[in-house]
Amino acid sequence: MLGLMQDWPLTVDRILDHAKNWHGHREVVTRSVEGPIVRTTYAEIHSRARKVSNVLKEWGVKPGDRIATLAWNTGKHMEVWYGIMGIGAVCHTLNPRLFPEQLIYIINHAEDRIIFVDLTFVPLLEAVLPHCPSVERVVVMTDEWHMPATKLPKAECYEQVLSGVSDEVVWGGFDEHTACGLCYTSGTTGNPKGVLYSHRSNFIHTLMGMQSTVLGASPKETILPVVPMFHANAWGIAFAGPAAGARLVMPGARMDGAAIYELIESEQVTFSAAVPTVWQGLLTHLRENNLKIPSIKKVLIGGSAVPESLIRAFHDEFGVEVLQGWGMTETSPIGTLSNLTPELEALPYDEGMKWRIKQGIPPLGVELKLKNYAGQEMPHDGTTYGRLMIKGPTISKGYFKDEGGDILDHEGFFDTGDVSTIDEQGFMQITDRAKDVIKSGGEWISSIEIENIAVGHPKVELAAVIGAAHPKWDERPVLVIKLKPGETEDKQEHLDFLVGKIAKWWMPDDVVFVDDIPLGATGKIDKKLLRERLKDYQLPTAIAPSRG
Ligand code: ADP
Image (cartoon, rainbow, N blue to C red):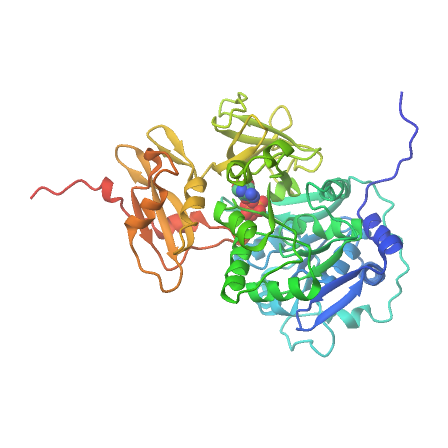
């Protein structure tokens, strides 16, 4: 027997309709790409998004067509985003930090018809576009006074294009499984892969995101999404913000510590989300200038593991709670969150740290499993490693135009490519990406765990641990360090710092100081590039002593 409730397709246009109807006056504040702070509301964003829809329809855009954005987090980007999705077209967020060759590959693979671009990225697009035959038009997201003299063919000015256009348009009315957003993973191995979100998956993800244990979005919050909209939908904030009627503060092109501090202080931000490197930048700025951020209650940190030193700094120096999130582009991205249970919260702070540094437990709608390479399920004992498998309505089941087809195991789980443990409390902890794990003497060493301790040394700016070939042990860990400016090199003090905090056989065989540790397109350490740079490096312990 079927239930007798209404069929109400879960499409994301309803999110902005709701924001306009019930939170229409709530502000979206942007540090505009042109410079000044710009204030708008959900009602205005709704009206202008509908104008975008009409312009796209006028240009012959049909449901399913891919329309790209190459843009920062701004109110305008939200208009374009909802304007595209509302008529059933697919909003393809391009990551401007990718190499031009990768962007060319992605734009061609997606067959983008139109690209909306911020002023900042016009030169980048000028270099890329001659190689992208599918692109018919470019819209520069600025007004006529700031419109650059550009070589881009058929470049239009956003404000001119919208002027005089009606905001009457029909949104939605299609199947909730209709594709809605496209985001390519950075493809650290092989070509980038297109994750194709549906209206339904994004809607369900929004409901998940609004929970107090996730983003906790509500009209009482002022949320600053530093995580870009091109990085897995700003972790859902561009949907959950309007869905909950939260006030949004968009950082535009500036994500340095000073700029982020300014916005937090002037707009009284209560919650923010970003990758660890952004927070390190903010902490440095706060410390150097003896500043505080009393309006902030909680920050969400994810994208890569959160070092204990970062959690402590926020807690001890600034009274801010850190919530760690784990997820992937393929998981929309919410996977797990490090909310402590009341029992764990009741422990002395230092004892609870064991769980604070873990990635935590999934919200409703996400299933997790640990499996070994033979496909057997591994115990949740906190020590046994396994491949982390994930399932749910917000998890990918295939990649866009992928010949490989089905990417799930026979039980419908997606292999995250992460290696992790799950403890008796249900707390998941990422030990490594499968391809970064260090295999030493038949056992695995977690590079992430060592890095997270090493970066806590006061002289260290960034730390990475990679495996180096060893004739006896296969691989041994090497600690690669970028020191803070002005600090002097002393290998031993960094090894001493690890003593007692990791197993003896995990102790790196060497420390290498470098001027730069490369970061990838989503702000994480690019280990592939780091390994390439150090390909001629030989472990001192692996070199046979010369016979005199
Ligand atoms: P990309 O591969 O393009 O960087 P994602 O942003 O989708 O794309 O990266 C997802 C990966 O980032 C995860 O599989 C995991 O390895 C890593 N990751 C994300 N959050 C965390 C976290 N809190 N701790 C450790 N690793 C994380």
